[in-house]
Length: 188
Image (cartoon, one colour):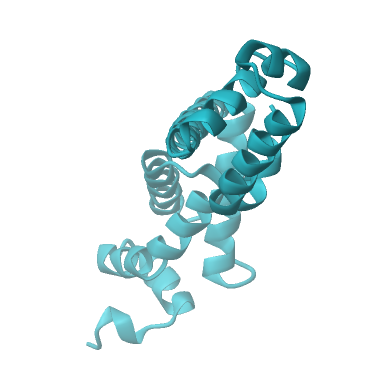
């Protein structure tokens, strides 16, 4: 007798209908990866994908005597996986999990964004610390305390032109390393 791998799907189905467990095992081994990937594409959870695939193959074995495959077996099984997933979604068994996963992903993305913003702010603070003392002082009065050039000149006893020069110099030194982000963070 030839090995099961030598049979085509139609022959394996006929053997399976005659209660041949080896034929069923060959069908399973031949098609489970494809079905798992199809389920994973829709559900994105390993446990659910395995459950869907196991349910479809269990159904296949239990209904082996009455199954009529009109196209090819892989298409038939793929359609069964799609219907099983649709039923689970309709019953709400997967919907809650998908929503939880989506929310968890969004929270994780927000956490990453917050970390990136903190790092960027730290980088900007370091760049500001590297400015010459008077230039840094003028820049911080302008950006942190939101003082006008006139108010800064009065507070520090320097001309408005000098205040303008310090801010221009500070912005040039900060824009170079920040690149395109400078227009966002330095105007705040």
